[in-house]
Amino acid sequence: MIIVVSLLVLVMLGAAVAALVFRDLLSAVIASCMVSLLASILFFFLQAPDVAMAEASIGAALITAVFVIAIRRTSRYEE
Amino acid sequence: MSFLQSHAYYIGAFGLVIIGLFIVLAKRNLIKVIIGLSILDTGINLFLISIGYIRGGTAPIFSRPGIEPAGMVDPVPQALVLTAIVIGVAVLALALALAIQVYRHYGVLDLRKMREQRW
Amino acid sequence: MRSIVSLILLVVIAVGFGLALLAIPFGAAKTEVGDHYTANGREDTGASNIVTSVVVGYRAFDTLGEITVLFVAALGLGAVVATGSRGNDRREIEPASLVLKTGCRLLFPLILLFGAYVFIHGHVTPGGGFQGGAIIASAFLLVYLGCRGRRIGRISSTVAESLSGLVFVVMGLLGLTVGTGYFLSNFMPHGVLNQVWSAGIIPVIYVAVGFKVGSELAGVIDKLVEETG
Image (cartoon, rainbow over all chains, first blue to last red; front, side):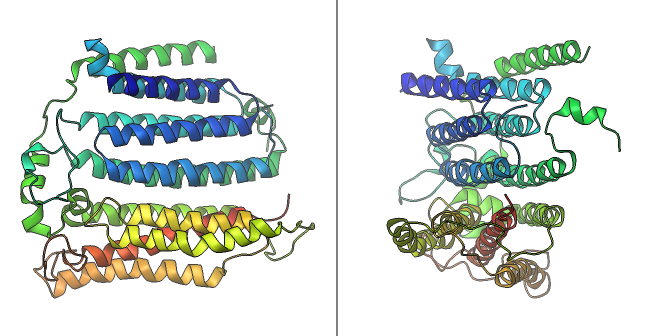
């Protein structure tokens, strides 16, 4: 049980570092969507189902869509 | 191992806050800064929920008839984080609309180049 | 100079946050307010989901403030991104393939139904107005991505958003006059536990919140998707 949680935390921190390092903004947005999704699974393990549903539907779906639309209207690559 | 067992969620929340803060402070592209804001927001919400956890507790819903109210986790941080997630998405959507408008006015999204151009 | 100051700031915040995290015991019972809410939530509000009874029953005024913040943010976004004309497609949108269009048209009412289920049963199962509203907004996002060129009506989404916000405030004012004398009091009968028609004004408020959040987020996506390239 604690092995599963530690593995999920490790992958979440790895995705956050990937969002820091990537130069292609679209890949960085997909990495931040993965951070949101793994945080939603961790909310479920912390016995909070309402917060897990809210984070999965709002954080992982709508925010990523708004980011992708904004990147489409500006530039795609960093500098 | 026991340190990991009691602090795994804290390490996750701490790591997300530090990485998000580093993106906000050190990156130059405006949309990268907004991505860092989103990661910082998620880290703070994870920290608040992990404070309200009680060992051996269940979710605060009386779904079956035999659940005791004494064995539940704290419901107040969950209500606060529900509000915080929705306000986070509102702030991020407004920040992205302002970033689109800045790009339309200046032509670049680099913070250093924007500081050099005058009105 | 700027990088040195930001590095010092990051180290200070990391040390402070880390020391605070080590001092908080993980998994111990800390407050007494939560115990009061779980012990008395069923009798006071009649909802079996204690998080719903905290959000809409005990602290309903904070939810009204949160809806106001969402409304002002959507208003600001509409004012900032406003262009001149709305319906002019400046370049040709290539039509989607038949499989994509049929799939989106088939999935759209099913996702709407699921979102409506989530916010109607907010006081019985995990869920509620905000989650259901976000699911409804995702259904409209699917229509934008799949069947391209279709828009939701601007007037109908604005009318739905304003009317549902009005329902929330009117229910609160009714609690002030008709009910037990304070704003947003639970004046309707509590009913039997674990049924849909229970918990007083909580289902009514959550249905209004679901409509409002759904139409608001769909309107935000609609304002951002303008085919200007």
